[in-house]
Image (cartoon, rainbow, N blue to C red):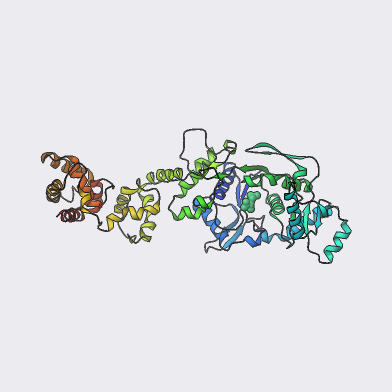
Length: 492
Ligand code: GLU
């Protein structure tokens, strides 16, 4: 049997990092089994629909490299399209299907009409809470005569359709992460399956769709674990085979509370805008609750496809640790080849107005090389590299090395400028300069720090920056000499 997994978000906003993890795991399971990864849009709650969120979800998945084989996609013009022969893949376009199957449940005596008003349900809940009783529907309409219920429906009375959960017994199933899970049926609500507006609830649509879309593995957040008995009951009533169920542990803030916006960004888009590399994000997200059981931490998507095992996921919640994400991003930035580095960084520099994009690529690569191990994200690059493009403003005091004096700098810098001016353009590279300036320093009996510190500050305008010869090489001879002379001016 072909393995088919799906990611089934509700279009209620941006793709959440937790959603990205669910999608990634579903993608990995499909791919490692030569199967298919589907994207279905679960928009049964029309009130919560947010314009643009389908596009946002698809674009975020695409950015992360999770290509969808079947279901909802965007065409070249950015329009939502659907690909595959088991559609539609947007639930609001499947109402006829839900109607047909809910009617079957009703006809078979597995569902019933419920006419309870919102006020009655509210009163019931208040009463249950006040008396410390379990909350839930009291099944009042379950005992209504079918014929009478039908008459009321035909007379136009507002109603919903509820599932008849067995009153006794237990529902047991195997969750790939938690193992065997058992729920008492009496504690499970008679779930609404069709709402008063004719739309299905998630609980009904998810079963019908997973069945007809031939989903073999349901992978979703922990919050749905307690709903699974309702879903399994629907499979049972239809005599359909249920898919393998997997519920992923919660994502937590570092203080172990549920991951929330209040403690940081939760939308994938925020991380895109902050300049995290998709490969780093995927690697980081893969490790939220999973690890390979070895020392290896860097995994490409292809390696994850090979190595990922759902059984190795921790049962407890996974802490969303941004420092780790930064670490991943730095690892990936460091390992980019020159051309890749230029390709991913250029848009950020262009946007910041530092370059036009027509600059020599080799020069750009050398410039980026200066800071690529010093920044955490691409968004930090323009600020970090600005000193190469704009003559830096700084206080002349910072030219003085901690073990030196103003007089010493006044002596060293002019002599150094004069000496460096004698270095030919051919020799103007970091290795050669290091040797030449090193020799000059020794000959003049200066200490290394008394030369390198003010040289570096005059080139970068910063107390912390890449090494002086690296910067000098990227700036070129003329600009470097000019900056040293400007620094001398700051001392008088
Ligand atoms: N629409 C549900 C959600 O966004 C999907 C749950 C599931 O995968 O079954 O969480």
